[in-house]
Length: 311
Image 1: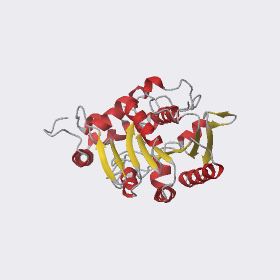
Image 2: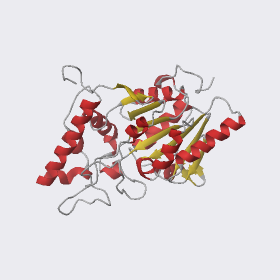
Image 3: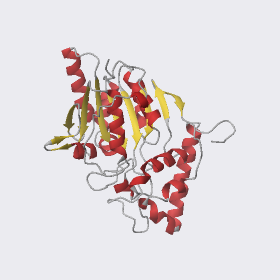
Image 4: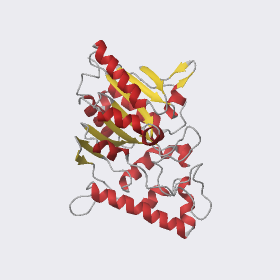
């Protein structure tokens, strides 16, 4: 029986076969870890669409293909529209028990691909769209995306001048946008909790219609962090409240993952060079306070603490 039909899969019982291997990703790449696990859960009967971005750059290097599935590179803005076409083809050909999945970064999702994504999920196309969010356009030189946190240094928001770092917005929440479409399933996940990630991919597999998963994936290159700190940083993002873990069905949030050990945002910011400039000026301290306010708002909105206020 394939992974598509086996609903009892756990991380320990996953098929030993790899469907994303031999790639050229940087050491400590959170995105490649997310794609690897998701494909192991989805199994061999999966059609994969990947736009221009990190996973295309490290997975489609001639003459090597790192995807051991039916994988294709889409245009940068067209991941969701290509998935819609594949889903229509699967339906027309009567191919049973398969999945159409897309893996796109935050730039290809929150910015360039947002229109196609909105159209596909508005039509409730039978697709699983997975955004691996490393909070900038990492593949093309670490440029700011609309998912880049306030104050972060990128190539287009340098740490210089009277307002150093990212001064635009507060980080667009595509999961909230997806929830607003009222689709059957939306979830956020992190590479710091593979059991939770595996469970959410498995849950998405068993639901008809459009499904959206948003996975937080640290990037050592773009964040200026040590490659061995990827999982620690992903965990700290959850524990400080900047990346809440929740699920929603048909436009309603149905559950959230409680924070086990709440930490201040500075514990998350300090190991990353992209935030180093915030600790040396009064303007920077204001940015840190703003990030803490965002985290506090997330904690309140998604009820990430227990009734007594403890993690």
